[in-house]
Each structure stands twice: as structure tokens, then as C-alpha cells.
Length: 288
Ligand code: GLU
Image (cartoon, rainbow, N blue to C red; front, side, top):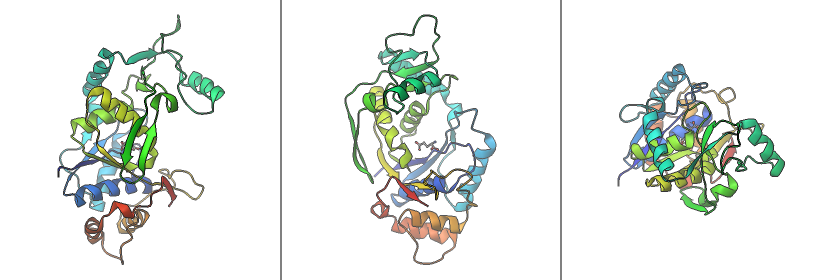
């Protein structure tokens, strides 16, 4: 069996308990399958990403014993590939320029149903006197169905539940949804294991794979760690020192509490041998 997994952190700060859980789950799933585990820095957001954080994440992974295969890939160095795929979509006639500001969308969307569904304002052209800010995908209502290895069968109509989403942002950067699809395909990723906060993004990614003629990987979305207030753990609330106790906690969170205290290396070895995704709680979020 060919297995290529990956961990794709956004280097906006050091790993915290939530991102450690995602790293550990994807590492274990890859290593238990005898597969490769790639590392990709999702550093397209220039305002938020910084090289210090990328270096810190690499140090933390090394310290935990979560080794990766091959060179680390940086999205900031791959914009030509994203532009190439964007042109492919443009030639297929499924891309349009949008002049709406974030504020305008938030307003009109809230007025309709309280969510952030793009109302389609620029679908048939930008109003006179307005300039193009973003590029959006013209979505269709046909539902996207997929099977998640933990969360089960899921269905979403991207057009109805998300709306025409952004492919190129107002600052010129490719959007996460496009970059992740292009990278997973270019790197031959067969298995995406990540936090369930990205479950609702998956149909958008599958839709793009279909439009670009790319294969769809298998997906496994593990629960997201919440703090005591029920909020997603942040860099502040979930700080980790990347040592054995953190690994032990993350394993317990994933339903793989070790039988007793062990040094970090043995912990990982034990977990790799006992890894069984059926033991992961089938939930989207859990208090850590
Ligand atoms: N960069 C994303 C994050 O840190 C993860 C993207 C992915 O795994 O597809 O949340």
C-alpha cells in the first residue's frame, strides 16, 4: 500500500496542544501504515506567518521525535503552481472577479441568515466604478459527498452552504483552499489527517480536485481541542513545551492513553504499534 501523509501547520506561532494533536495523529497514521510523512509550512498569509515560528515548529517536532521525510515545503515558494491551477480554472470558465469588500459581505450575509455565505453579488459582473479585489469560484449546487475515516459520511452543497468562495485573495495571495489542493496533489498525498475544524472545508477542496482533474485523498478528521470555556485552543491557552507529558496528554486525547509512564521515544513506538483510529472519539471537538 502506498501511503503519503502530511502535516501542514500555519507558522503563526509555536505548536500548541491542538496542533500537536493534529501532528501526532497524522504522524501515527502514516508511520503505522509504513508510509511517508511530509511537512509543509502554510505560510501564504504574509501578515501572520513568520520564519521564527516555522523554525520553532521544526524544533518542537524534532524534540518530540516526530521526524518527517524529505525537505520541508514552503507554500510561499510555490505561488507559480497555484497560479497555474488558477489559470486552468479560468480557462474552464468557473472563475470570476469580485469587487466586494469583507465588510460588505459580512453585512449582506448577516442580513440573510446569519452565516457567511457569499450572496453572489458579482457573479454576473462587477458593478460599474468598482474594481476587482478577489477571484471567486463559481460553485454549483450539486452536493459533494465523501467518507471521513472517523466522522463517517458527509454531504455538503458548496453553493448553498458556503457560496462562491475565494481563490485569490485581495492581497494577491492564493487562498488556502486552492493552495492545499494543489499541494496535496503535487506531493502525491494519499491521506489527509487533520483537525475537524477543517471538515467543512473538505467539500470545497474535493470540488476543486474534481474541477482540476486531481485525485481525492482519504480523509480522517480528529477532534479539535477546546479550552474550559469551549473555545478552540489558541497559542496562548494551549502552549506546550513539546516533551513527554505533552505527548502523553495528546495520546490520551486521541483515545490512546499509554498503559504507564514511558520516555518520549518509547511512547511514540508504543503508540505506533497500537495505533487504531477506531479508538479516537468520534467527535468534532472535545475539551482538553
Ligand atoms: N494550515 C492549516 C492549519 O494550520 C491546516 C491545513 C490542512 O491540514 O489542510 O490549520
